[in-house]
Amino acid sequence: MTFTITELANDSVLVEGTDRRGVHGEQVLVAAEWFAHKRNVQIQDAKASLDQAFEAFYAPLTAAAEQLADKLSEIDVDPLLYVVEQEGSAGAAPTERIVRRLDNASVILRAIEEGHEDRLIWVNKELVLTKPQVSVPAVPEPAYLEVPEPPATPVPARLGDENAAADTAE
Image (cartoon, rainbow, N blue to C red):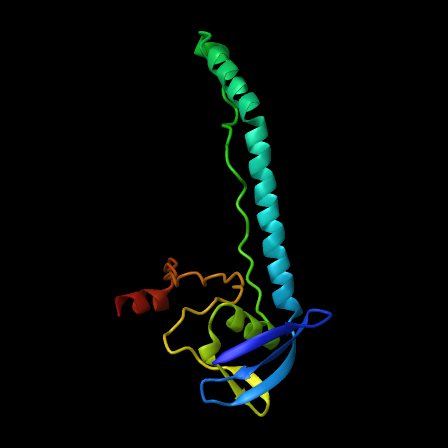
């Protein structure tokens, strides 16, 4: 099983090769989603490198500010003179998980790039992805907020209602 990828214009590629059954073929894939994902990963890596450079650059100033804060906190203040109205928080704000379903061309290109050529076969001159041999946990579809139904609660009997009294006696 060998597949070669030749990059074409406009996020397209030519995939040619032989599958595990010995069938040879070639196909042009438009894999804009896969290339967009890869560009996004590169951008995120570059941002992380920039953030690290900023942290290293400002490390001496941050350390000096922390020393100053430690010295200022040593001042004895009577706790009756102040109240805490809101506790502070530190850390990053949580981010929402984003899952995007790839189109068929992007899935095939990803399978080749990540070493899953054994799952690709030629069918009617098109590459298709076979089911995995080992079960892989499925990526969950975005869940919608489901409001659970309230539990059933017995209705209390009213005074003077003989039917309700008979129902509760049974």
